Image (cartoon, rainbow, N blue to C red; front, side):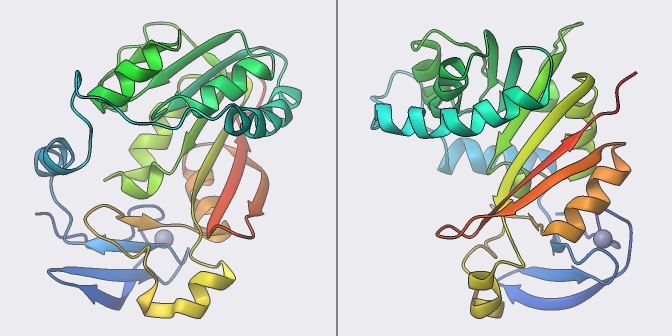
Length: 246
Ligand SMILES: [Zn+2]
């Protein structure tokens, strides 16, 4: 376990917010990120996910492959398609490939996914997508670059959001966009729940963002915020940022 002395996004100081068992949750006084300390180290975290989270390869992976879901996600992929000039897309944490199917419907042609879960990766490969069955930071992309990178419900899980988004930014083509979706700590449902908010859920959720903490994260990674959208029914925020054109 590692003790965090400062906010992992902006390096500001944190105030104790609440506890969850052995974990403390702090709120950054600068960017308002809710972050966990202590955190498991990378090996401990990988072991937790291996043992408790993913579906092993070869085991029947049950996923309701609803065409309406891919179609609905294709509307969001179309908006991203209009923001960039090219047609390549990478999803980090593609799970069973719903968004990748939406991206295909939206006209993206060079599509890839990263998915550490063996069962999910196998399922998505069988849909015809190129999937790296690894942790994102371990994938060797050589000189492949993307117009759009999407990551949904992942950044709240990562140990170091700056390292994660920095590595993603390095894979963007100039002018490319990143879309992140994650639970929103300023959502009215989160504020209503306060310290009982169910997304305060270490060690699975380590960092919880809002517009302000996203802006700090984008700044540190050299990205320009494009838009923030809070969802209504789900307690999520979708943030889009762009890498400046060369
Ligand atoms: Zn901060």
